[in-house]
Length: 290
Image (tube, rainbow, N blue to C red; front, side):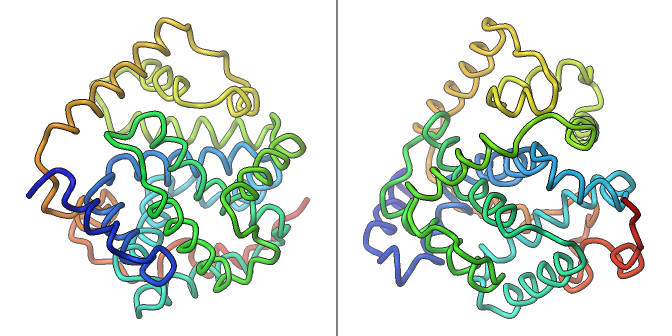
């Protein structure tokens, strides 16, 4: 299969009518590793950098007690929608489950928009920096339309309907609401601890240093982190650029790289029930003071 056969197929599709199919090809076969890093990991990091969001997550203690499961459940719900479509049986179950979980929290609509904006913008930004090729305009448009439809089904109000407006909202939100707090710092250390656990032979300090190299300055400040040395940041980016360059010469992927198409740490046999992902009813109904 030629390296650009998937792109040629995508370019024959309509980014409005066929956006789910375009997103599935793009995320499953063109950039699976990149979307896992940017869509899930940087998307979560961006949300955790907001004290309003971080405090809601941290108060119930579920993320602290089940960090790996929290990561896996979030990934599964996101990628099940990409694999099967948001209007499939699995996709509808994911949206219903997310709406049910969110319904137990008093979430400001601006925070909903920001979390969605981060999920839209971060993969595009990552791709511009480290992709083996740049996403086409059709791919960007399809990615936007995919999330606009999910936003409607999650009843998110006033979600901007263009990439420019979403990026503008994201910037304005971060100017006002992203700063350091005990909750942001706590969740950052939990998250780095999780990533470090995936590489038991690598010192945690080294894992954290690499992670800091891909965070922007605003996130570093929100997590009370020092800017990494320029030489190390340049080396990390060089490695990512080298990876992209090597990938550009390899044959196209023929097997899906989606998170849900391989075993996860919490579900080694992929034996999960979407309707039961995330916190239990007992945890969700726990009364929180303060």
